[in-house]
Structure formats: structure tokens, C-alpha cells
Length: 318
Picture 1 (cartoon, one colour):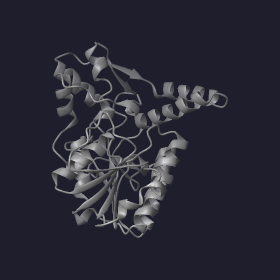
Picture 2: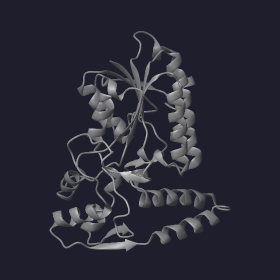
Picture 3: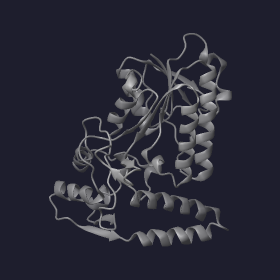
């Protein structure tokens, strides 16, 4: 198939590009510039333009053989309300209108499972675009992954330096089914041909049972051959930080931005990344589908044994 890919220089976008190439698809990526951390594979068409400004894409993009699908792995980097609505909603809406006019019939969107219970700006922005995509008349596949390995790698280095693993509450307030970059990319690429994933909202996690932060800590210390050491952080501490930053943010814009990040941190500290059963009003691991082969603990073992840790960047919520 001919695929138009957006967000190919991001973590999941780069993995999705590799998966598409492995499956023999012809891929065109729209990127602002060549990304130093993402080597450009051969055999891929690169269009240098702003992915968020489809009105400025070159006219030649849609000449010749039509695209079979567009895949968007783009997302706002900060989660700040202005950024979230600009990228997760407005830019995607403009892209939707452009690809629809170009006759592309299938739109595959990388979303997030946290939009089930939207409380934050980026969640509301994503959810609003999901609704627009569903109503567009196009064939769609909306992929809602649970948790990324990279987002759960932040405490490995501090534990290796001799510090305890930090948990909120008792470490069992939340649970998730993390999915690796490659397994998620394989699932996204599979949406092209698996008709059961068409016109569908698709929560997806990795293999194995749901795990809690306490489970993560136990796995890390067990691999290191050390006794478990954890430090409990009360949720009320996060509430106090949010209040202080929000109050200061009324006059200091930088504090407001940090307050928004603290709200995101609190959300992930108190909400599980699993399918939400609205009838039972609880998260349900059994209803959260699994895909792939690699577990988070497999990745922990590789990183603790010396493999380079992933660069977290804006994933460093905690």
C-alpha cells in the first residue's frame, strides 16, 4: 500500500515507519527537517513541510498514484492546553480535511487510552478530534495504547544509584498493561489490512497481566539482586504542588505551565491505564486487549544489564 505517515521522527512514529517498511508498504513521511536522532531509511519518500500546516504541503504530494491510508503518530509535546488544542485537535482537523479532499479513504490515528476519562486539556483535545474523525465518513482506526515502556523507565537510573523507588500511596493505586514501541507499531501497521480494526476504537496493551508501580519496583530490585526499597509519596503532596503552581500561575506564566504538568502527573498517579468499564465504574484489565511479545520487565532487564536507556524528553512527567 501507499501510506502517508505523520510524526515519523517521534518515538512511536519511527517504530511505525520501520514496521511499515518491513511489511513492504511504500511510505511518504512529512517532516519539518531531517531529525538527527532518527536516521532516514532508504526507500522512503521524504516531504519537507510542516505536518501541522497541510495548506502549505506541496501540490505535488497528491499527484500520481493515490495514497491508501494516512497514519498520524503526531501529538503535542507538552500537554499544555494551547499546544494540545493546536496539535491534537486543530492541526489534525486540518489534516483530516486535506486527506479527505485528496480521496484518502482510511485514517489511522494514534490516540491514548486516557481519553476515556478526559480531565486534562490534551485529553479533551484528542477526544474532540476522535469524534470529528468518527463523524467524517472516512474509514478510521483509532488506536489507544495503554502505557509506553519509555514513560515507565524514569526511575531505573535513580535505583541503580542507590535510591529507593518512589510510589504514590501504597504503590497499588494504579495498574497498566505497558506495550513496547515495536509491538505497538506492529499493531498500528496491522490496522491497514485487518478489517476487524476498521471503523473501530482500539484500546491496546502489551502481553501479560496488568502491573502496578509496586510490581515495577519489585521487578527492578529482584533483577539487581537487592532488597526492595520504596518511598511512599502521598497524593496530597501533589495536590499542594498543583495549588501552589496554579496560584502562582495567575501572574507567572512559567508557573502555570508547570502546574499543568503537575496535573498530568497527578492524573497518571491516580488513574489506571486500562479499559474503563463505565457500567461497573472501574478499570478492567481483563477487558484491556493485549498484543505483542515483549513485556516491560523484559525491557527493564535489558536496560539494567547495560543497554542505553531511552531518552525520555517530554515523557519525564514524574
